[in-house]
Image (cartoon, rainbow, N blue to C red; front, side, top):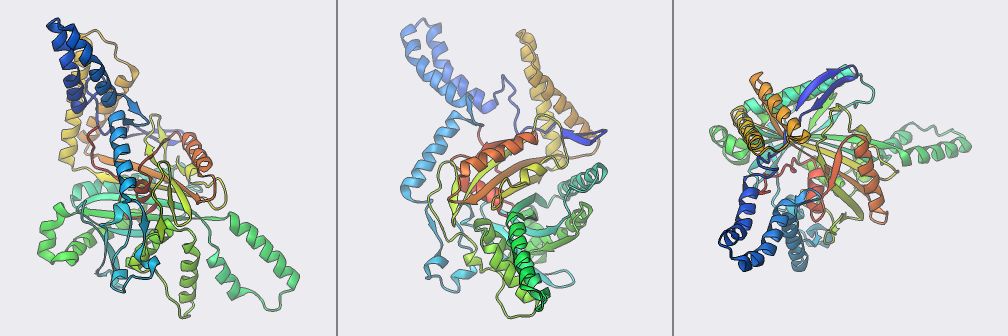
Length: 511
């Protein structure tokens, strides 16, 4: 990504693609498969065996189409594989979910372990050792499959709507500094930012009114105030901002062994980076950074699945703040959904709500800081919208090698086109310019970041979710971004887009 300054502020462009197709848009694996598919036809034709060539031609054509032709962002072969796995999972009943806590059979010991569906089944939540001057215990999120240990902070941020372009650019520079420091520190493997625009539950307002209402107020004034309050609260929204920092097990194993064993050793290595990250977050405008403990993370997961739980949790927090006896937080074993039917191909239903998830495609045109603000504005009261950005800082040496490979592929493709007299299109020219810009950035001492975005819209299950999804996509187009609906994988997309766990940046696939 490159940045240039204009009269309206700094604009960003030149996103580095995950892979470059060095020959006619095909990468090495695709080119090998295509070559293997058409080779029998050419061999038969060279030997004048036209009968065999005619028999092989339909098979070769179908194979090439499956490998090359993209359908809504995925090759046809990938669609076929995903549909096969989806159908197999439905037939076996693997996607049907009901929590043990909802059946009443969960033991106290079981309630201390996460009971989550799908991609979260292996997740573990641990109480870390005391952190900071207040000896606050931070929740350590363990992903055994990915080999990652993470901590999540909830931010209080004034937003970007009331700040000028220079302040927005300063926030963007601070984010760049955070990612660059993470890349050079070598331990941090992922930084995830999640923003949830949720309907205001009104619990805080109710508690304030009960504390401040005058007992001598006229009945008419009370009735008018209640009517106004119902109207305002029903249309009000609030923003929840989370940042998750993850470290790789492969990178910290040796350092953790020197400090302590097991979870405590990993947690203490992770703690070394939290204060540095907190400084960068405050430079990005955050007025409060609170690292969540286990019950807070469980509550964030619970409200992600069930929006209606936010009101009871906030009411309990208000009661506790006033010194009244109550129970706050959510047991870890009850953090997941009560029940979730087998996911539909185009949506995901959970606890009476339906979510449609998308992957955020990076724009071809230049964009500005805050361009996605419109995407987070709900189109109707009761609708929730989320946006998650997952960053993976690249090691400077590896980033340099990747750019060198991009340059080699670009030069190879240009040489082949030149020899065959083929025209170099605008897309190829733009790609060549991006590669040159990335090389210049690395030469200037910067590094590179792998990035993925996920977004979702959630409404009550009885609402027409496809209409809300269509408006969501229209708002993204107005922001110069495009959304790709995660059909056949909405349960996994929900985890990436709605839950502050740092899960969502996939490994590089085959295609």
